Length: 498
Image (tube, rainbow, N blue to C red; front, side, top):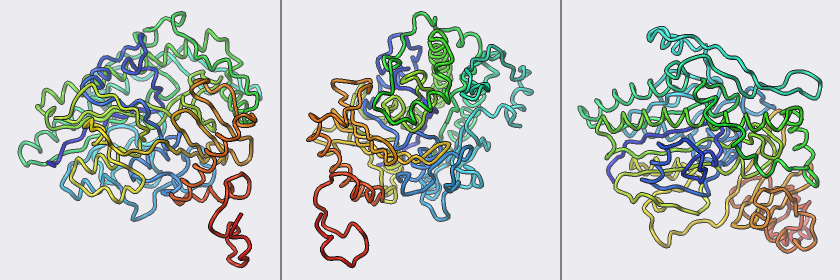
């Protein structure tokens, strides 16, 4: 295979149901919808973990979080490491070694001591979880283009359990679109693409360019035309707003209080959803500018395009905001679109795939052995719309904590989802009968056979991967016979059969 250029478009905390291509009839996402129509849309694309830093580290390394061990965002780190270890394989360094230009415009958030530049990326250093509107390069952009500074009003926030003001959820931005951080990022990406295109023409040097928006992560801070784009009265509430938390892990209700859901009227939730959709529309507009530049530069026939995000967002679903220790589809199933020149368009795949699988796909497009990306599988056979592709019939996801340690593992199959919560009640959802995951069926007697089968399957998969979470499962749940000493003592031959 000839080495392909790669344009990797990424957002942060992006719900699947905000896109027209995924069935939202009100969405204003023509550019991403066109990308899906001319490429492959994956309907079961999952994040390995619904939190920024671990998910982004998994994309960079092709390794699951338990393996690379960068398990939490540094802003609320609960004692985990904050940077990838020395010698860690990353696809960006492999691309560099292969002769690629490699650029990242936008959000990094994969460490504190090491920047994107330390892993071979060109571009301004933009750390953190939100738009860094005080960054010198952004301020220079505003000054060079005679654009007004960042200013907001109409703040939306609730009240914390202790009576304090809740996290800022949204606000009106008093800047024109051209001054937004999103427009700035797209502009810098186009400038880098122009430089890389010249290098490709003059020196036959391929490129990887990632444009990573900080949005639509909350707080949703956007200018008037997008803040007011959607009428809140026409925005449907998620059905899971009926969540009662009955039979659920108590942490979910605690998180609902932390995100102040019940301190705001439902009309505010509708407005938040409307503003969130507007934020997605703004990003789609900026993506359209970048895709237009790609065509203008004559790169479309040589450039594979990806669109995805690090994880989803609640935006009122299950009476929650942001993300957290609740492994619902809202934050684990995400949009994923891949377009490769020469491959068929309008393809829809239903296999369980992962953000992790981007790593092996990028490496294969570059003609690099993907073996070091040990938890990643190339998506190219699916993009080629091949028949009979062997692919796993389930997916495993994990979580390790945010604000406090909270380990979880999830097994998602065609119909069911099992979530193991060691310090709380486990969860089992029948997604055919209950797609909104409102009823925890784990304790239901009629689910005993399903529960046992899923528990054993998750146990086996974790053991195969080397994820030591399985040790807790060995003693606490019915996993069947095991052909090893579960005490790890190596001393009692009678404990080899349980």
